[in-house]
Picture 1 (tube, protein in one colour):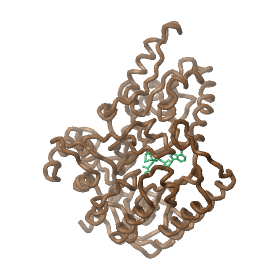
Picture 2 (spheres, rainbow, N blue to C red; picture 1 turned 60 degrees about the vertical axis):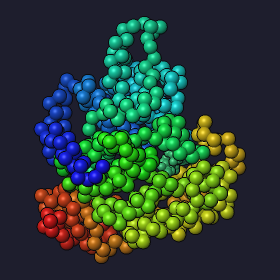
Picture 3 (cartoon, helix red, strand yellow; picture 1 turned 30 degrees about the vertical axis):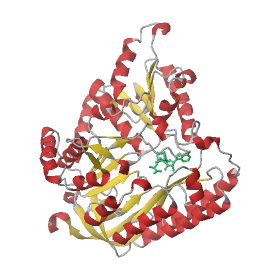
Picture 4 (cartoon, protein in one colour; picture 1 turned 90 degrees about the horizontal axis):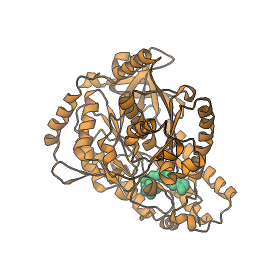
Length: 495
Ligand code: SAH
Ligand code: F3S
């Protein structure tokens, strides 16, 4: 599909929602007014979110769904909630342990209020299914990442059988993988001010030997192209300026077009960039194998592509990558980054690392350390390997002492932190493109926004400028993530 054929469709979709508040700030106000009005009569929902961006996204979806279907309003206090939902993560053992300790706390609340409804969703739910209710019988509903859209029906079923004797009650457990159905049922995506998070694909078909994601979230499924574009166009009409495309392997996107063809991630990016108002495109989280030439060319052609990339590599040792079943070598990764940096020398790079994978020798670790130094990462999500039941790597012998793993992790994290400090320091005197997001909490004449590289930038200006991009010269480095500057150009002045 070409940009020209798409735009009218997206506009029409956007017009359908024109009666809703048109500015992100209005949306916030509208929800506040509603909350004030309904405070005494409304039922309250508390959601605890563990884990990744996808879970954050899913939690917002759950709140939207139960708000629409049953009028639930979110609360930040579990003590005043009528329903408690835990959106769980099973990526590492520690995350999984949190579930039952958290549920233990909720059990006490249920003892005080027997009408309290408790639900468990997310990847632990997907993996454990009804064993959750065996261990924690006070849990009323269990649902997986692919069935969260069925929450309203589950809640109705719960209410219908509340009076029934225990022997007649059916267990409310639904952790199936009904393919793309989840995407069909859901209301608005997550919007934070001028930024929106849009889920474009789900799951993973890569089966790295250490990872539970393909088993808990299912294989890769992409949303149809038109749905994604219409959604982003609607958001842009409402004032959204930055879009963050989400998926476990987001650059593996293969969405079907209206004509039944397959649209790649790079093609999607070009279409998103053509939507009026979209000034910035980010995406999380991508796979090196899917990081195509076409995608690199988007960085050459599209100013909306930020000079910031999160590209998980997991290890800097080819032996370890092989044992991890990553299906690519270090050289492939290095080559792709070199091409990208030839186009964008200021590219900030972040990655995921697993330290202490079974069989990781000191030599393998030294290779990872050198790789990290060579590629000059700005940030990482780095963790010690965690054995996950049911994954092939859980069978591998692991003889490296825990203390050695901890020392390795601390060393790479120190190197990356220093590199991050150096990168912030290097911003001094440079011009950054900043999305102005709000007035400073402490100084009413100052504005705060984000640079491409995610640092917060504060500078003097007027609240009328919020939602615009500005070119700002950096004049002072305050902390690793916070700098001061002065305005050079405002988007509306140069347009
Ligand atoms: N698309 C990404 C994967 C995202 S999954 C990719 O290309 O790799 C999120 C992250 O969780 C992974 O990058 C990995 O670093 C971490 N992770 C997954 N399983 C893990 C395990 N068993 N132990 C430690 N970290 C793990
Ligand atoms: Fe996990 Fe590897 Fe997919 S880390 S999410 S199986 S790419």
